[in-house]
Amino acid sequence: MLIDSHVNLHAPQFDEDRDAVIQRAREAGVGLMIEISDKLSTFEATHGLAMANPDIWCTVGVHPHEARDYADLTVDTLVELAERPRVVGIGECGLDFHYDLSPRDTQAQVFRIHIEAARRTGLPLVVHTREADDVMSDILREEYAASPFKLLMHCYTSGAALARTAAELGAWFSVSGIATFKAAEGVRAVVRDMPPDRIIVETDCPYLAPVPYRGRRNEPAYVGLVLDKLAAIRGWDKDTAKTLTSEAFFNLFHRIERP
Image (cartoon, one colour):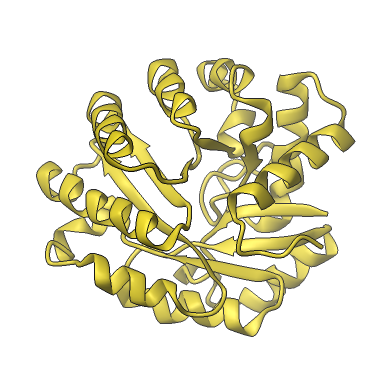
């Protein structure tokens, strides 16, 4: 069974053929998908997809791009929404200093709210980080020292130093279609050093389609291409890659029963 740990099927790019996209994923052997929350205003759509499909689960959270609209977000709000059925993670949340669509201090504030929600619920934190390695490292170390929490460094493309810090804190890492890009040797170098029992795969669809679909809309049906690339990078055969990433997935998203 293939698993796509990060999909955005609520995105408007899928409005015309969402059901067909989900069916193509199933036909490609994708047995589980995690539908990711990026803001609370679309959480009902995100949660609705999980409730309507037995092979889709979801998270609840606010992307750092949207943090400016959620400066008053509370831990209680996230915890309450996380109690709904089929919610298995907190996020996507974190820091994005590339686009700076939200003030950096607000991003950090909202990120810390998510960390506390992850602690209270015991659910894994889905972390987005871009061009914020030093601040991200400081926050993770400080918060983890205060009280541990499970975390996933989603679509990891940041530096080796932050990867080492996260690994020391027990983080999982997800590999995306970026690993297939010709110019992404730096990403592949980091992937080679990730803890082998804490790597999973994702598409982040509709974004970041893997080669040979780069530049087109991404779909969960393409997650097998990411798995193939991960296997090549790590020197694993495909069955080994599938077994290791599946085991890592269920160890992380522990609310989901193993098949």
